[in-house]
Image (cartoon, rainbow, N blue to C red):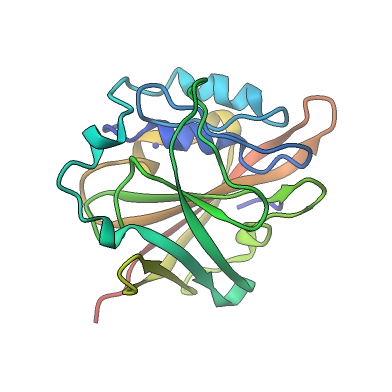
Length: 216
């Protein structure tokens, strides 16, 4: 992949620190409902991220009580990088790892906000997977001012405008900012970036694209 999370949702950012390894599926670990990414390619990052994540219930029913599931994101389209992909609602497994979908799909961390809600809506995907490009292979190429469309289960569409595209070293992800649960609505897209270390089987960086809702 080419290069560019303090409230109850900090963990996802950490999880995503390993999204994008080329050899195996990359997952996002969750320490009490907040994910971190890990895989053979990026496990070291997940371990670093774990130290940043506050504990809270990982049960979806605790997080989504009263939430209208019709506004759960189900697809994302980014014309400028040729992306049109399904979004899968993802959580964590028995090892507290967040399951990032395989190559062609994007994962929505279901403990983050829904589109248009307060705080961050967090999407993660691989930059490459099993030797082929992942859904976020071209994420680092997105430019400020370009648009992102997120379709919800009720067939409505939320449009976003890219405001930032930044590459962070794996141990330097701003988790508090990326996974906030309050404040203005924002979309955060995360994958791996930078150089690939063949010995550690991990990328050096994370690419984080930030976008804000387009108001009529």
